[in-house]
Image: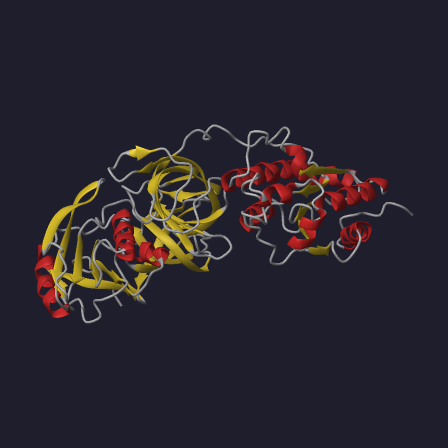
Length: 540
């Protein structure tokens, strides 16, 4: 069977969205000026991540609402649609009570492009539908160019010589040379299929199966590109971020970052400025829900990307909370930060395994977490004494001690607590690399920062020890008088009083200090380390 040629005209892809209203509005079937109409209907969806993923593959948007534009939910939706570059937008506002909204207006959708937003007021869905055909007919030709450099986001790989994915830019045909961006492997295209049929070519928006003449080894999450024109890979970016979560953005906190097909750990390392109501930049140490501004973004590993202006799919990112998975921010990449481009890891001959073997132990990080006064430092100190007596090599990092040196510049705000734990986690990682059994005793109230410390280490090296005592018990102990001062208002942001503590969900060890003695609990920790294989036996 001869290959089928691609469609003469690429589809016009529209995003249809809105939290409320528009239930009777259906976009017409057929085509617009010869282009088939394809609609991504996300009405009723309030997940900003889903909106961003669908919207980056579209060229225009229809937003329906039965609330005024100043409504918080509607305003947030419009901000997301604008941010991801859908500059041609029809906003249909149902207004049965005839609220004072202009019947229509046209204006700039975003600072980056001169695209147009049309706002239309109607008393019901039928009224609004009358405006829809005219708007569709008036859309400019915004079809993606098939001549752009080829990019495909891999969603599956049935074999080492086959990839399945959505083409996000350009086109592909048999004979093309294609590269896996992150591995650098190159192969020729043998065949292209769309919906099970062989094609002479496939273009933007097509979900294609591509077969190669040599093993390319693609996996889900890879980006494939034209061998002669590949996107960059980097792990640090300057970006435009819209924050959507009630909890504030904290620089340094670990989040899950999704860029194109990839999800990696990352954080905002710097807030450059927040965009104020007049469009000017305003200094800010955090973002709250609805804030938008310029930030620096750092990822745990380099990934393929392109600036948003060049590729909306590979230039848009979502920020998700690591614990709940909810989308807390949406942003676009401006450019890679080059400051680390000439810094490379130095190869060393003595490895972590060799250092640990010389010490007759497996390196580990024991992370003691709990309220002030729960007994963390007491138990950690006893554990280190027992390990030292057994001939093991250890180091104890204590919360109070590191604030006299490494973290002396940090206070106790939520942002400073995040940075405090980030620095300690990186320090502890170096000590584990030295082959030591490292003990860290910190309140560390936030799960996200404890997860950051876990993620820095190899599987099995992080041991979370929850030192647990009820608030009433630790207040009664109050060896340093801190709770009394916090209750009197003399110590702000005190964990357990006016700052939250998030207990571990599944710690490796759960020590209840109001039920057993510190000596008994220290013995339990050492026994755990022995049974888990951290303490080698060197005797006869």
